[in-house]
Image (cartoon, rainbow, N blue to C red; front, side, top):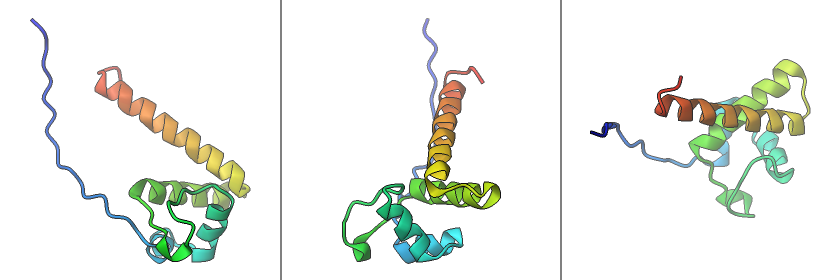
Length: 102
């Protein structure tokens, strides 16, 4: 007999933030974010700055990058790399939990 797992949850609405909302939520200047977008460290779907929208995933990335830059005096490129590695680590841990291997 196979084991069946039922997962019950609530879908969260994916609300996109404007540049100003993201800057406010992360306690940084909008220009700080714009510089990292210009360097290719943060994803945007539009070339026009006034059309930029950011997901909760980007919000978490900006918070991590800001903390890494501040706490370790890291350059933006290094902070982005560490944020990528932390995201991958989070994904692997979630995968282990789903498989019951945590």
